[in-house]
Image (tube, rainbow, N blue to C red; front, side):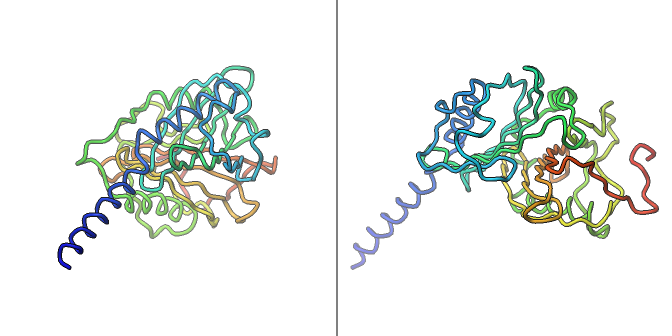
Length: 282
């Protein structure tokens, strides 16, 4: 009986080890490489797609044939993060040439090496603060290496940092997000620290106005110290699709990148509180 129980324990331990290895960082990296190959060539057959893959663009279901991934784009720069526990990725893609600049934020869900879901935010000239050339300029100047173990924080702390930012900026000034120094925000192409001042922070006078940030989902890469949040501003069905990518070093914000897709065609206005001090005046 004891021998049987020991054998069963070994079997279960072995199966757990196999399960833990079903998704690996190299597997996710290969999936992203296939996506980028498809996006560069406009040939979706180069993507490692599952036969039943699902597609979304700007948080709207679409088909394999209709997405921007069928258009060849001269990609200038990318940043990718890899969520191994959930087998998901996020890639920021910057396109400045080819006649139509874009900044894309694309998530992949992967199973057994195949992409089962692709969810892409597509921003261009009609979107929030859009300037692909400046997005490229400032993004390339930043340094996003894998962090040393002592510089990392837990998965939950990264998720909390993303949530605290939104809740502070739009709802509750009593929240204490992990502001870091130096830090810079890159929003559509607008950069808050173009001179790379060592004392600048990402802090915003808040709240900017009451707005609920809903439908939040997360891709987390502890090795990179990053969390990507997909969300909508306002309404859960028709609110503006948005991506915020947070990079934390030693648990403090270092860089924040945003991609916001304005589906209304109307200007986005958030009324500041009466006593707010513009960031440029700080």
